[in-house]
Length: 404
Image 1 (cartoon, rainbow, N blue to C red):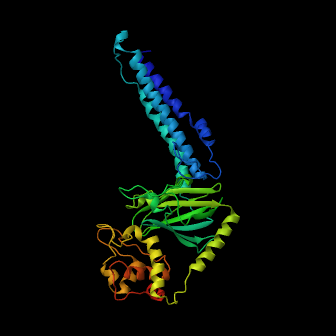
Image 2 (image 1 turned 45 degrees about the vertical axis):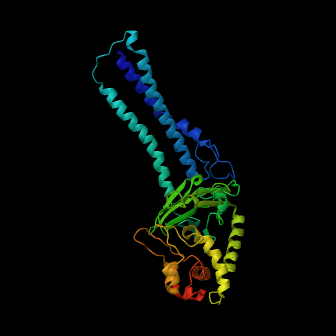
Image 3 (image 1 turned 120 degrees about the vertical axis):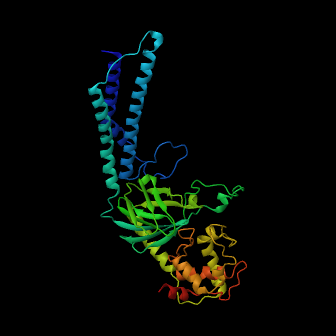
């Protein structure tokens, strides 16, 4: 047998060895399990995927391991044969180039074998992708609305139906710092990965997440769940997860959505059935307590005090604490024609948002806020900075009427 034919046979044997790995590779990868109650977020120095907390995430981890093994074996085989041939058949040992013609058998083999390897990867991957898209028979359905830069959650079906809240970054700005300035407070363990309102779901229940957005494209992602679903304005998409064990799991908006993109974390707390029922009861009582009577007449000082809190929580990121906005990106409220004009126009903007030619939604809709919160923040902006609006107070009843 010539050197060329021996080389071809060796390469063919090594390539076929790679195709025979799935059984033991899958078995080895399948032994990897997540620690119960893990942090569910990035860990310092971690080199691999996060520990999976759902069956889908486990399948993704196994696929990742299996495909990496196949690629590694092919890499070692090809380059091993190449370097062996270069070393053993070098000119200094007296070897001369062989003259040979093509081998039909080898040509067929190195076409068929890679095809089989690809099929061996594609079949389990397709099965996982199909499973990821099966959102039927969900126990709980939650609507997720992305907005610059926070998440809104509405429990649509199942236990907890009717619960609605916004989820904002809770890391203090004193820990974040500013361009050119060091943070004034020591950063915590969950820096930029903590929120004021966590999503709470029961363990071992199928949770369907329906995603959309108010302004630009966002992406709801929890790596430990194997979930990443874009939230697109004007479209409704869905995904699901079923956590295998309790714990707190963290993710981020994984679509570049603007200058505060890094400050849009996601936190999901998976609890027992009993703990979930307790949370649902408490959350509904909390919502009932916050539901102010829209017919109540407030004083201007009461509205300004409440409005400042609403502004700090929801508006300061875009419009700044000084009301100056961000030139070229977000409008200034200090001296704004809308803020100093008829109050009906400002109510309309907050309820319906405001489009512009340059941005998909320069001002998103804030319908999710209560009538009292909207009235308060409008009153606050009309009486702050250099603003001196003629119609300087808005009552909740006026906002309620504008919704109709």
